[in-house]
Figure 1 (cartoon, rainbow, N blue to C red):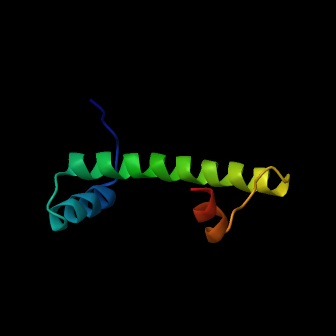
Figure 2: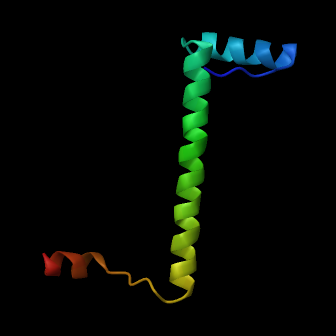
Length: 70
């Protein structure tokens, strides 16, 4: 179980958003937190790819090359 402190304005905004989207506050906060974590993971994976690409460690294949290898 978690608890957090919010201003009354933030609490009202969150409650209204959750209600509008037909979910509980807990469902909304859980979903928002997990989406944030997923986005951070995706961003890190993209950064690592860009670093590898800049270092010349990434080989790209054309559509035709992939099909010919199958």
